[in-house]
Image (cartoon, rainbow, N blue to C red; front, side):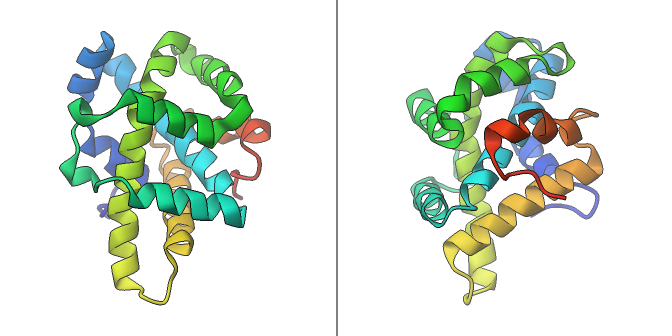
Length: 186
């Protein structure tokens, strides 16, 4: 659940332990926070692009259902192998291009982005599991995939309207638009 002052992306970032992530990555916490927000926006955008296809929506909904809610997960619990599989599925053949482009935003280190995506991807899935579970409980008429699409759209709209990443968030999907397909919303 988000506060009235924050977007779903802000909520997700607030639930992550940036100092733990920075320590795991051997990175500065401020740079890690910036990279986290940019990478989360890209992951959410890629997942949003996937739900436009009914098969992609069903596949993502099944994968989300296999992850525990974020409240039950810590950075130390993350399996990077699972994260690699998720990022490969989300970005497909464009994964390396996504990493390259994310690495170019605000001078982020490509190596940091490369290490961060497989750690964040399972955390995003766990966050979505929490959000979809709560949304589905409140709307029994909605299918899991339909709710999933709504949650992803809410997260992306909130991030763009609040400037959650300190400035670059609105341009991330513009930068990645051709790579992510139809994930860009207006």
